[in-house]
Image 1 (spheres, rainbow, N blue to C red):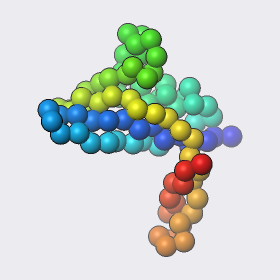
Image 2: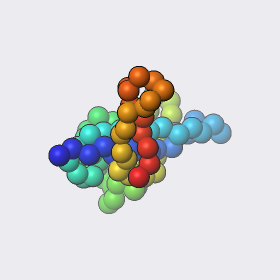
Image 3: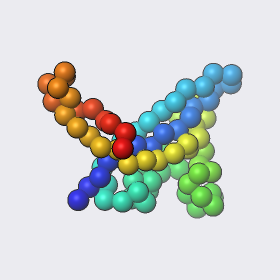
Image 4: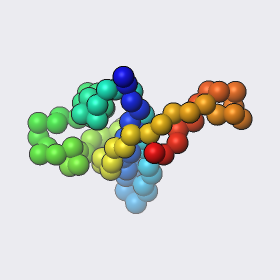
Length: 87
């Protein structure tokens, strides 16, 4: 059974910073991290831990912040397209 994991990361460009998130449906947290790294072309072998991951998003420098399992429920206001609620 697949679970939904939300990966959060911080984006920096000089003195500006923003937050980014991505939700992935996988069976385990490790699979979610592997899929995220592959999609972002993060060279995981050069990092000891996923907490050390940094990569470039265009002109932005991104840094991994956290991963957590979230629950997806249907939203009564948007016609059931779904919202993510923290567990």
